[in-house]
Image (cartoon, rainbow, N blue to C red; front, side, top):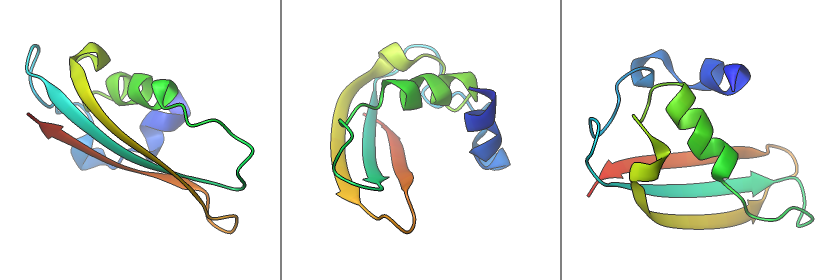
Length: 83
């Protein structure tokens, strides 16, 4: 989680989007090196909470998840929005 938090741009750390009880939408596109991995973003949601981007991942009540392949540049692109 510490390594994840360090990769979150400083302007997004500790903002606690949505305060403590507002519902959130997560849009995540995970770019894997190959199609061998399952699409699972639970660790990413935990990382968003650890970095202080969101107060608690239980407030993510809507998720849009996409898996792509980019063997040269694996990454995750995220959008977190208030609903």
